[in-house]
Each structure stands twice: as C-alpha cells, then as structure tokens.
Length: 476
Image (cartoon, rainbow, N blue to C red; front, side, top):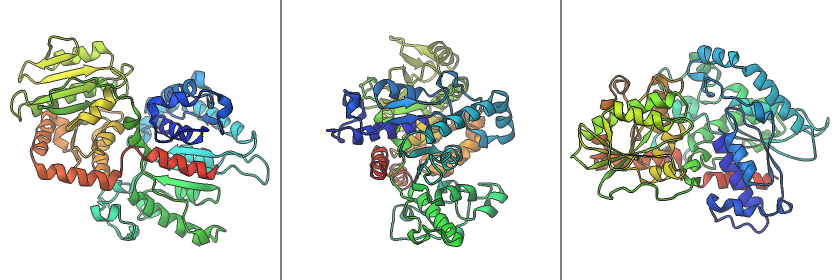
C-alpha cells in the first residue's frame, strides 16, 4: 500500500504548497519543493509492509515528508502482506521472520507521533492493520484524541456479489446489501453471519463508525454504499452522538490504487509498430515469485500467438530489476523458446515468430499499460490498473504466495469476468489463457463490455488521489 499512499502524498503536496497549480502532474512535482518554509504541513510516513522504498523516494523529493519508525531495520515479510490467502501458513512464516517485533516497533512509532505536537490527522491506507493503529493511537491529552481518515483499498463489495452495471454508479438507486445473494464460498460462513451484506467486518465497521473517524473512502461505489449502510446502522443502534449525521463521512472519491500507473513518467520506451496488437506481460514484482510467474506468462504468449495471424502481435515486458534480474529474464526467455534478435531487448519466438520486447526503464511500466490492447498477468495491483483501462487481461496463476489459484478467482470476482479472463485450466495449461485472450480481442462486443465493466467497477482513472487529497485538506 506504500505506492498508493505515495500517490496521495504527491496529491497532498500539490494542494498544500503555496502558489501551487494543481493541474500539473507528478512528473514535475519535485519543483514545487524549493523552500521548506512554504510548506503548510509536515507529513510523517510509516511503512507497514515492505521496506518503505516509496516513502524514502518521497522524503528525498519533498522537504516536508519524513519516514518514521525503524526505517533502517525494515524487512520484507515472507507473505508480503497476503496473509489471508493461506492464513496459518503465511502467518507462521511471518512470525518466524520477526513479525511480532516489527509490529511492536511500528506501534511505538505511531504512539510517539500521536502524543507529540498540536493538531494532526492520521491517514490509514489499506486494511484493518493501519486502521487499528489509527483508531487506538494514544490521545495527546485526556480530552484531545487524534482524528483519523481511512482509505480502504483492500476490500470490495465486488468480492462478494455480482453488482449490475446500472447499480454501481447510480446515486439514485439504493441497494439493500443484506438482501443481495453472495457468491458461493466467497468467504467463510462465520463472516457471513457476522457481517451480512457488507464486506467489512463488525470490528472494522466499528472503527469507521467511531466519531474520531472523520473520513472513510472505500475503493468503489458499491463498497461505499454497503459500508455507509453498515456504519449508519451501528451508530443508530449505539445511540452515538453522530447518529444524526448518518454516515456522511463515508464517501466514494475513486480508487487511488489506479493512479499509480498514471503517476509514473512516460518516456516513449517502446518502439512498436502501430499495426500490431500490443499485449502487456505482468508477472508481478515479488522477488522469487515473479521469475516463476514469468515462465507461465511466456507459455501463455505461445497460446496467444498461435491463435492469431503471424506477426500481428507484440509482447511488452516491463521488468522491475529488484524482482526480475536481467539474467533471470534472459534465461526464462531462452528456456521458453525465445531467441535474442538484433538488440538485447528484443526477442523472437522460435515457434511462431512473435516479437517480445523487454525494458527496465522507469517509464516502461506506465507506457506498457497505456499502449496495451490486452494483457497476460500474474500480478495484483498491476492487473487492476490494466483492467481499469477497459482492456481484457488473462490471468495465469502460479504457486504463490500471492498470485495463486484462489487469488485469481477472487480477483475475477473483483474485476469482473469481462475484464479478467480466468479458468482453472489456465493454471494447468497457461496456453489456454493466451487462446482465451485472443478470442476476447477478436470480439468487438467483448471490448465494449470491458469498457463498460471497467467504468462501473473502477471509475475514472487518474483522479482519485487528488480527490482524496482535497478532502483531507478540507479536514486540516
């Protein structure tokens, strides 16, 4: 969630620097910080999962951003934060890797920040962990408690129910989520009993219903309405002093997760023939897992290329060097039947002649997302960013720990079957995924449904961080 928080911090600084023109993009935002005396606020960023690289880049760029906590001793947990996929196994691995000590240090950092200074606002981005840190932060004084805001990017009502297109962006149409049937086996029976009709559980709803929670921004319109109903019901039943306000602080402002690609620099990295169909390969960014995922994505490439006319497609592979070293990428390409062409970054399949380009340039991912007509993916956030642009993506699940069969099934419920193509056979034979993508791209009606589905489930791309930032500025 660090990258999502980084987008919001960028947007905050666009709105909080004197003389700032908020119409300008992130690529020039470093020029806004010429004098720290112009800053209206100080921002403290606490990484909870991973090593906080996104926050460190922000601290180098902005004079008013500081990384708190034990930044020098941060470490990646084996689960990468995806404990819910295999709770017992992943949690035990994280505990052995020092999870308890890490949580203790993070809580100490929150507590120290909360009791210092005057005023302030805690912004929790993600799931129950940052929300709990914000809700239980110690007060500055007996009478003064730190208010908090919640940007919920981890949960969606779409995981549970098939929301019709015409309901998701229609403010005049109210849906009673308790009466909507859920997908079979979408969640354990105990969760269905505890929280009928809402993806957020009672203890999460309680934190959002707390009078100290001044803003809650779920990731989509359907989730916003379901959480708003749950919060209103809890406040009314508890006789809260804020019950008369209902749940007006629960607002749909867009999904900042989708702004990550839009905020990345664009540099014209890929030299692609405009007559070709561009397919983006997204094997993920988790070290170790990404290498195995890449092999499966390459097999799906063969299935796609064999289903379309020769030389009609071009595959783009943006690689994060930290997760996919060049030597591992090259070895995977050679092993899966691709040979190096004229340049080191261009490969040609020995089976069907399809071309595949590779780049580790900082602009490569953003450019690939913007140019792609479709995608082959074994990633989480990157897949959502591509589907949000209204193009179909074929999912190729692997052994995890993140992009497993169960993860892909849940992601299809989230993004919709029009946008995310997935079948259990894709895990056994990735070439089936490539063939399914070729079929989807050849059907004009499928493309239209993809665009409609993306707009309904994800909303507009590139504006959510600014909307959240403006709301936070209003609170400050």
